Image: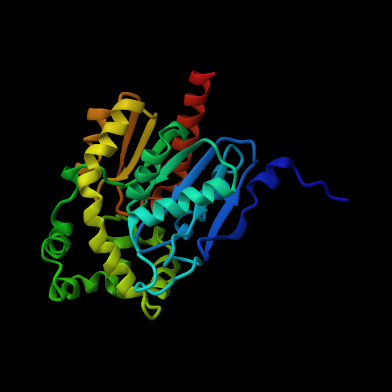
Length: 299
């Protein structure tokens, strides 16, 4: 009989679905239940699939949980007329998932849309946040530059023509561009990532979901001062691993974190928006080292 080591058991990824508010919420989970928790929050236009390589890499040391938001990945996709696709709703759903899993403390990995979802969650339960890993996740006005100009126009007037003007953001060319822009060696990219994302975006009704979320992102910007106040008051240990060539959330959004956070380590990586695709091992190693050092300091 072959005995499976505890290390192998911990690194095994489990694919699960839980019912929350009449929605099926899919999530990936790995690692020992009593290990420190990292909650991985994905961005647009992807899903927990963006963490497919990071999860087993971290699972020997951490209990890792990565959900799909409604309308993404394998979670339910209700019609946008029957379900409000907002960042507030997303944060509440993630909060309920955490409650169902019995998680009391966690570090947050925040990327793109995952940043406002996670920071709203942090405002709900600041005492639960043990640390932050920020990868191209914005919390400052300095980080909303040229990419956001047509979206800001939609925020300002809310007109159908302004909504139509940003629909190009969900077409196949744009999805692939998000992965390739700012990347020096394109052979490091797995093409199935943007192919899978596009399958999700092309589902009937998903464009309206994405446009609703683009519009709702405007509600995050007035909350930036609240996010920053959370940083100053609670001072969570923060690791920034940021693709510095990102046009969507450029490096200008990474620098201001050091204004409000004292225990912060910043690494600007020579890559684009989806930094995990090209610098996954470096990011994983930095997470391990950073969080392990924080645990030692706290002991």
